[in-house]
Amino acid sequence: MSTDKYGRTGQKVVSVPAGEQCFIGPFDAELYNQGGFVHVDFSVSTDILVGVLSLQS
Image (tube, helix red, strand yellow):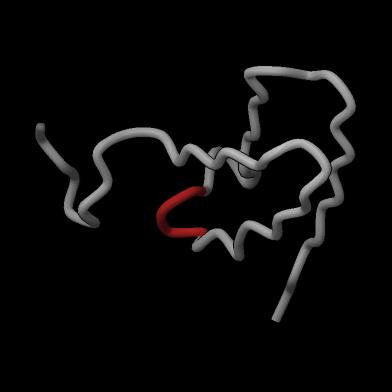
């Protein structure tokens, strides 16, 4: 499997069991910046609560 210069092989996949919570990030702008945004997709959209923080220096 090929990787980019950061060792990534594809998308970041995080699986969180029902009833659990998970904090993901921060996302390095050099790696994840997509036109000034980080795009997040969900494979299942039932009972999902999402919070987003924007950290600026």
